[in-house]
Structures are given as structure tokens and as C-alpha cells.
Length: 224
Image (cartoon, rainbow, N blue to C red; front, side):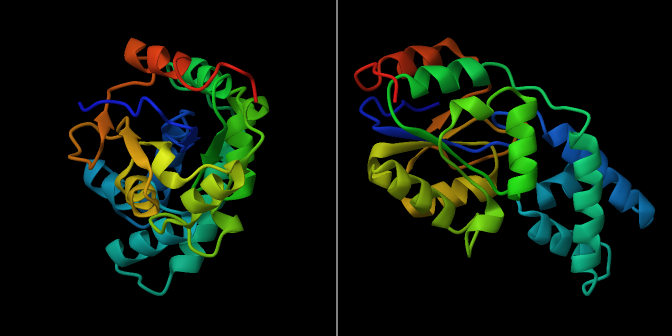
């Protein structure tokens, strides 16, 4: 399981599948895309796309479906389907709201997401978390999204805290690689069960009492 960074000066959260239950939206959309091309969609296929940008997920889909030149077409189809599913609403995952608010009361926080701005904003508003974050960063706002470190480096620079003094909360291998490359401490709550993911701390839910106790001990308790 590992131990949490007790002297953390900032916390940066992923969004999809970590704070907000959007993976169900993505899975419905991905299943429909695969079905439209005559293929089933299960855990093996989900592992190919989870945590990726829309563009990278579509490229992986195109390769898998034997249509390597169809990435842009599949990206547009996937984005439209996700947009439709997300418009129906997405709930915060267990413990997410409580942990975010406890961290925010102690240290600077941000979101670093591999979703485009449109979908990131929709997810946070749907889950009632948008007002918790002064700073959020989306995949279409950087040159190199996850697994590159730019999203996390940008977040830490904006918060004014070195990456080595910051904690990243992630759920996928793509996001973990990004946080690790940026030099953050990596806390992981996996979206897919059984995945052997790199981590400094590993849990099964953001609702674990240990996390809330940790957050309440951060910083000086002043709201920022």
C-alpha cells in the first residue's frame, strides 16, 4: 500500500475515473464505436484506451480495428458519443468531494486531466466539484498531454510548489507515467481492478479513512 507524503505542499488530481465517475460514459461510447466496426469491447480493449486523450485512444482503436488511417474519424465519433453520454450527468466517486475539500482547506490544489477542456468542465460541474478548483488543466491546453509530464509540471508551476513536494492522485497507467515523469509523489486508486500499477501509495477508494485523516493534517488548515 505504501505511505502518504506527510509534508505535501500541493495536491493535483486526475479527473476521469478518479474524481468523477465518467469511465462509465467513456465505456458506453467506446463499446459503441467498437460494435459499429464489428468488434466486442471488454477489459482487454478498455486497457488499450483508458487514461489516454481522445486522439490517442482513437489511434489505438484504429490500430486494433485494422484501420490505421482512421484515427481522426474515430476520434470525432468517440468525442460525440462521450459528449452525449456525459450530458446525462456523472456523479463524484466515493470520497472524492470530501477529500478534495479537505485538501483545499490545507494546501493549493488543481486538476490535471487528459480530457479536452469541454469534457473536463462538464465532468466537474456535473459532479459538483467545479467550484472546488481555481486551477484546472486540460489535454488540449498543452503541447504534450499525458503520459508526457507537461500537465503536471504546468499545474505545479501555477500552484508555485515544486513537483517533489506535490502529490498526484491517479487511476491509470498513462496518468501515473505523467506524474512520475514530472517528479510528483504518486497516489493511485485504480479504475481497472487487478492492474499492477506503479505507485507510492495504493488504495481501493478515495473514501478510505486514511486519506481524509492525511488531508486534514496537511498545511496550516487555512483555506486558499
